[in-house]
Length: 115
Length: 115
Image (cartoon, rainbow over all chains, first blue to last red; front, side, top):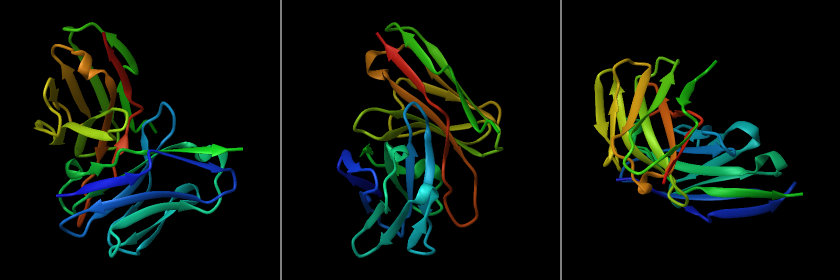
């Protein structure tokens, strides 16, 4: 069985500061991991995904995440926050070859960016 | 380049009324899903479909029914709406890939209020 925990329902950073959104997962098999972003009144869109290739994954809009098996973590980072990064971010986990219907989403972390 | 389209975008229902949410995708995806999003709970899978003519229950199926008569459409029905079904509903689709799961493509959401 898989589960995912996002630490912090709200994160606030200043524009230009480092963004760090935390995600820890639990999985009985090597997982596939995803980060999605949701802008106000929109659906989720993929930021990046880990599928057992490189452990450091680069996504859109300057975001990246590192898969750390020993820590069961997949934290999302961006070196310098921009006002347009304000959104809600969801981490998700699934087991390979199980289809998307086995994907488990975290509760989400809302990112606020201060000018 | 429509992707996943949901209708309607907003709806207010009275308790006991019925309605159908429509989802259409133009990406020829095999898998389709209906999720509900509630504050602090992330996304929870209601029903899903792995192909035309097939449907299956997700995590929270009670009070909902679905149909997938055509590959590109996935309908979600509420037979007798209850206030507990007040939520934002998202339709999503994904494709089959050799060797692993793929990301989901989401619609813009339907905000449903049951009074």
